[in-house]
Image (cartoon, rainbow, N blue to C red; front, side, top):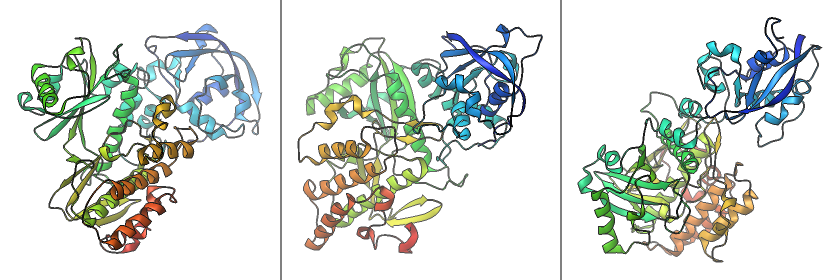
Amino acid sequence: MQNLPTLTGLGVVWEETGTESFTQTPNAGVRSGSDLLSTLLQTPPSESQSTTSSDILISSDGVSFHKFKPLKQREYTDDQDVTSVCQNLREVIPHSEEKVSPSDTGSILEAFENMHIIDPHKSENFKECETVKEYVEEEGQDEEVGVCDIEAPSSDEDEVDILPPFDKLLKICQQTKPLGLSEAFSEFCDVSRIVKIGEGTFGEAFKGAGNVFKIVPVDGDFLVNGEVQKTCADLFVEVLLSITLNCLRGDGGKTANKNICTNFIETKAIRVCQGTYDAFIMKAWEDWDEKHTSENDHPMIFPEKQLYITFILADGGQDLESFVLSDFDEARSLMIQVTASLAVAEAACEFEHRDLHWGNILLSRDKAKTAQFIMHGKQMEAQNFGLSVAIIDFTLSRINTGNQVLFLDLSADPALFEGPKRDTQAETYRRMLNVTQGNWKGRYPKTNSLWLHYLADTLLTKKAFRCSPKDKRALQAFRKRLLLYDSAEAALTDSFFHGMWMGSEEVIN
């Protein structure tokens, strides 16, 4: 974090004079947090500038701007608190999780860094719609913006920060306009050969040429499958989550990431699409419906103007619900890979999945005998007994990208917590609510250990595999202990995993 400017000498007191709203951010520059404070606290307006032309516009959302003008000059002393000077700016400082202390000048500066600051007199020095974070990076200044050590797409996030959600999605997907569904599919497969492989309330899944296509309708004004369609704003969060977790896969050693795992499903691309289902996609849907009897609405309900977000993913295999585990070794392999993956993501970006039911864990078999992870810079290798695990669906997840905390406010869906008693999945949602107390933006890694408890219970009560009485007792004891852990990282040290680590058992301690 940069040092605050010294509060001495001649400065300016600013007065709010009104507000303005813009469809697009004005063609003017933004200021870094410390640069802004220098302007606010130390730099008097030129006598040649009129009061009106010296106005500075400040906003926390890039749309509604508060207008300030220099009111008078005053003398500051070394020990004067910066917050007393900024008293009349408090209303536009973005809310943070923790209340800003009156003496915490660092928090005040950090709050300013996420704001859109428009200074007409400096516009020639900055790019249009540039964010404070990007400005600081381009100036080559060191900046602590969060815990995320992976190479997440921070610049993209910043560039689109002030755009409407639909335009944000186009920007981050590197598109200028929506594609047709077949056009998006054809980049990765022969559309005539795709098949539908599954469905959910909010989307459909198709497969072609080793890729999985997840289609989610958005922003429509009618119900789909009995539910209100998700919005572009909802999907933008999921898109950023997917891209950030993709970065955990590493880059082949080009950068020395301290936390790496490959068990979160690979997102190959994301596309914004529009229109009706094309003939081949419609046929794939109807073929699946004939065999399985779809519970979803027929896609013929979608009009030409319908928008979709399409995720192009790697094929991670079968979900745990349908996959047949062979023995206790595979069950332990599943548990250690999921636990280690959550632990790595906790360390890298404060990740919490928050919906890790057996439909969101994909399994396949390959010739690999071990699974590799890096956590806090330490190499870890565990036996996997030829089982490969992929974690999917980050709709309810929470993550700190380093620029912002992304999460879904589960309070908006009270039915999620009203499932049947003694159903482990329903109880897990209620346990999460008890842990978070409804603060879904907050960091509560215990939610990960709650889902690990669910997973152990699912193995014991809903899956059949070869298992000795001793092994079953060990899994039962592990299930019980999981409720005591405050994170997946803590659970990774459990004795249930002893003997699975290659090399020293101290590798995770």
